[in-house]
Every structure is written in C-alpha cells, then in structure tokens.
Image (cartoon, rainbow, N blue to C red; front, side, top):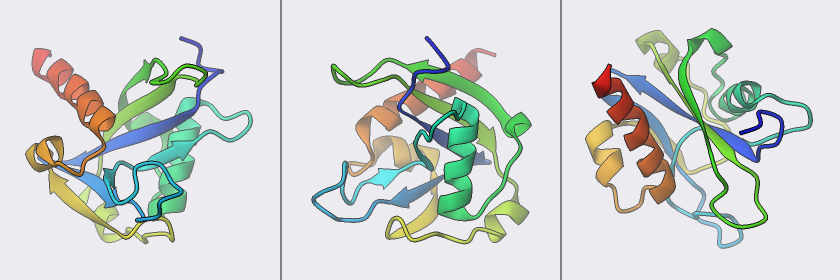
Length: 142
C-alpha cells in the first residue's frame, strides 16, 4: 500500500511486557470515547507514516524518539469504505523515557499496562488489540 495516502499512524511502545496506553476522553463527539488507546493520530500534510506517529507521540506524551527506534511497521487497509489505510508501528521504551513522560491535554490519563491486560481489556480499541496481536505473533516467529 502507498506510504503517501494514509489516514494516520499508531505506536505500540513496549517496556518489557508492558505497553504504553492512555484512556481517551469520554466525549460523545470523538471516536472510541473512554476507551484505552495507543499513542498516535491523524496525518498532517506531507508527513510520512513514521513522522506522523512520532509527532503525535511528542504532542501526546512529550517524548521525542528517532525513527530508527521503530522496529516494526505495517500498513492496514481502511476499516470503512471511503477511508484511507492506517499504520501501526512498534518499538521499545526505556525506563528513563517513561519517567520523562509529560502527558498532554488529550485523554484522561496514561499508564503502562501489561500486554495481556491490554489485549483482553473490554475497553481496549478492538482493531488496535488485533493489530498488536499481529505484531506479537510475528515476533514469536522470529
């Protein structure tokens, strides 16, 4: 799929067996209100998928990572007709980076959640849980 026509990008950032997540605002006018989400968001003009995901990470969590820290990425087809594809990237976070998080003004709060808990969480965004399973299964195959 094209790296030029996409809707947005998300990040699965892991620290050992935990993943960085945040609870979305509970507003009826946004997608997935109140659910647990991954860092990332919509594309701005001219961005690559990687830059989109990393810009959103900076805006949402105050973390600046280099593109080289992204160790996996996949483009997923649109979930609805008329939409563009979206991306999921994965990488690792270090303890010092977690300590440096400065949560922005989107979302209620953040946490490191165990991978198992996020994957099974009834308030996790279902398509992101499934995409994370894709990543984890590929890592097991290596």
